Image (cartoon, rainbow, N blue to C red; front, top):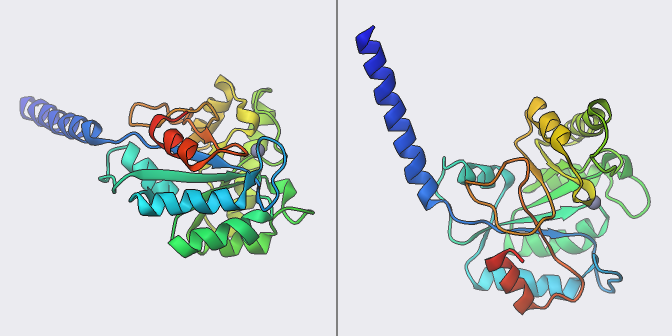
Length: 244
Ligand SMILES: [Zn+2]
């Protein structure tokens, strides 16, 4: 018995030492959020395709490494060493410009990215089709969950559970991969949301709060930085380093 206690204690110390060692070397990771990317953007949340191309060229030129979702979580969890200047590129709302405008630029640089899809919007006017989602998923784009109808996640457990779980089921049936991560529509969520995600075994939930993520971040309140219409490359550079 004494031997067992010693062994358990030894393993515990070994594990916690490793966790601390990795945690110290975990970088702060910016998670960028784009919506519609188009030649003629209107409103705050649409983004110019020219500016987007400049942003991606900036990442390439300055040695940034856009991550897959799994790489992102593994770095935060300290199970893999971060590459040079890690960044997570995310896109919300599964609009069709992602396929026609964004994906070709990502492909040009071989950049990984995540698309948070609203499942009831698929195959409707101005949105991605199931076939496009499938093709994107097979080509290095992570497809994740932005609920079934883009509803704010502030209601009761059952409503939130079905909004998230039904989207997970539909996305898995399309891409054959578990969506596993949720972007909260409008950035709205509450303690019920986080509890639902935990219950469904989701790896993380993303807000729109701004700031950088690190090993200390709550996995269900991962901060994202909104890219807004008219943001210059210098604003982009500032957001990458400060999170705001
Ligand atoms: Zn949205």
